[in-house]
Image (cartoon, rainbow, N blue to C red; front, side, top):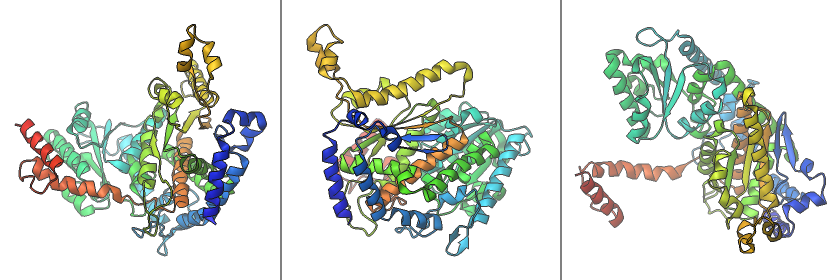
Length: 533
């Protein structure tokens, strides 16, 4: 069944190349309405792609044939859909605002979720109102979160995105084991006014614990034995957090059915909650829950995450485009491309199916991007005139936060709309010739056009909207993974490098020689030893 659908889709893809995207609007005055979908004030426009009604129908049939609805329901139900680790996948339970029971192994997890959320709220309020104070009894003015991967990318992205709602202590994030990251961060802070949160489920992540020990030493140098009062943790390893000097009352846990890159909704989001407050954090959860309900309840042809995923499948598998660019026209979404890069590439960067057999189609694309308008003065040259076609995913708010600077937002909106139009419209040789005095320059000003894009528009970037955006992309990645037949919820690809790094550290320190290493690694080690004197 699915082989036949793939064959028909590839035939549709070949036919699509004969009709420019712009011409599709001339043929169908209602194209925008047909190829867009809304959820409240949020609108996803995918009319500037080469999809037609036939191709979209085939893609929806493919999603049904691949079992997307059943797999989706199994995820929300708490089934162990992460088959390689025999785990449920229930980040959605963390934002279950209806508080309906969610079962894992016959056990309702919602009371535990509610308990952690309540503890987060109490701790955040205590830090914000000064009830939980520094050693000298004064308020904390700064919070440093130490984590990496999912324990960093989610909260740092969301904290930056929701900057207009900050009314708590300043928040800072350290992730890289490079000493420059923690040194530069701590250099600007007063240890007497700083709370350090260490986020590591097992409390063994080497980069995080290296940074954590440095931060603890920094606190102890200033505060002595009382430094533990400036520490908190997000972890399940209570024995290790206690040994580190952290009071159990300041340790918040999470569960193995929440993957790191999906964990911002729970205790990993603590620094965000401290920054914006529990009420705003609840709005963030509610936005994600609203997208969850839409994903579960909307028919596939009107389902925003499903349709965004199907556009992705069309571009990756049918049209053969290897990358996608995430282009938020919002400076406060500067870290969203990196966040979605991890979400997408760590989830769907797989080459075997659920049963361990090799995949027969291309899977996860390369995901990259930067905020507009900065990107226009950097890599848009390649997007417009390069030899590879890069599907672009624009997003922009209709309204900015700075009412007194409305002219900035008007220009931002104009640029966002202009870029998607320019990608589609292009400029032919005759039109290019009219822009130059020297005809030999005309070919250099030709834009082939017919380059696809989607645009996500919403009223304003507030906590609820950010929750919907992140959940939209989470479910998009899930649907694509189901269609590819892969497990989107493990990440074995990161393990080998970690193992080799542990083995290499004694060699870097000069405590062992490079016997048995390949010529390149041995040569690099020798060069490093010489450069270090």
